[in-house]
Image 1 (cartoon, one colour):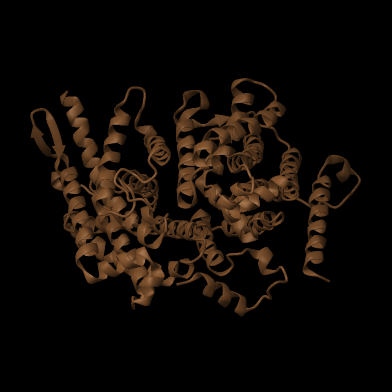
Image 2 (cartoon, chains in turn red, blue; image 1 turned 60 degrees about the vertical axis):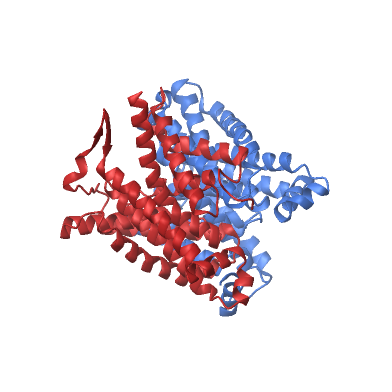
Length: 289
Length: 332
């Protein structure tokens, strides 16, 4: 029984990471109608920033999260304004290909700068955890979950309580109408993508605390972010939170099933994806399109 | 002389060279003192180009004609390769049998995943098929009989000429298939689905059957390429048989050349593969070729979204105005 409880807790903790990864992805997809295949690469850029700050300046990984957000915000704004804005009205195959190209370039640049070696961030408390009657909860994973929930809260406040957030939602609802009431579309596209990238960067910082990072470590996260958004539903912050936690649970419980090992993470993700798309295409909490 | 006629002339010359050049390397020709037109590297590159012509043309059938952008075609390539691996290595049967079985296995798999997935559209279909490619590769990577993470080794067959002509044959088959499809009722049905699926259904196109059939044909062609690749390379594993970057390359080739046309994917495959080979051969390693591919993707998508066939096709002249116009059509 305690074995099972442990698995459930680990699942929810992993789910927190997926929430962090999927929030920005979901925002960009919902508002800009772009499935950003470079999302995983942006996540890993955040990881490397945290790693550099940790190894060179000995800054605690959780304290470097705002730095990740700021750096990725700038990169994201420039990417959308300079490059992606140029194909935003093209058929979706083109935005797909374009973001894949951006992914290739970012991953290759990371390879050039940091080489393919495994890098890890190991603060003093990384091995310790909370002991509760036979169950162990690692502090870093708990910190990651907390950070993810703070992120979700920030996104909800930005979207629902600020003027820019209202403008972003208006762009997502109807671009032409938004332009008619005086919203600067180019700026809003760039701002939306920048927020998405900033959230990716924070997710990357969280990931670096419990996983060794390489330039290609982000690729699985793009597929997983997609599954989380499908599972939860598009267009709501709460849906992403529920989808992420549910997917973390499914993955951990699925891998602990007999005869399945950790080698099947992507296969499980894909099965969940297909089942949800066939049975309930709008996701657990999604609105009807 | 029209652009069209010039293109046919160039294509004819290229085909003649492609067929004649390898022949000068066989013993009889060399004894007769014919000048050698080729070397080993040329064979490798030409075979690779032919392989991508198969994959890009096959992708074009589902992605270009039917409008379903599949990011999982590489799964068919991998399944074809592993079918050949199992037939030749595990069962010890002749390679010719693998050439027959590989397209059947790939097509059967296309039916199984196609029926649920082809109900999805747009992003959903694209990423679901991306998931197929990743997941099938991962499952293969975990199965002991298939060599797991080590991969499968096939007995080495040393014959550059054989594999070049096999791939060339597969490429011709793929191009011919596209040409035939575009001239049949089936092809018109696929185009109708691409333009407006509801309307196609209303005028009596059995959309599910048409889509699954197109997916199957694409899968069978890609599976053949995979089987030939397995025997040619004599080693297959998850990385070379299920490479997602191969899938993106075939799409890019079709897009660069012009989706929905017969010769577009061929032009795209030849030009892009030569560019990639040049970038990789520059001695700077694969990192720069990856960066080059990424930048090339961005440039193509932004500036020539309708492909080079349209670009040089006479409807528009090669001018700055063309770029400005395509930019205006698609940008914010």
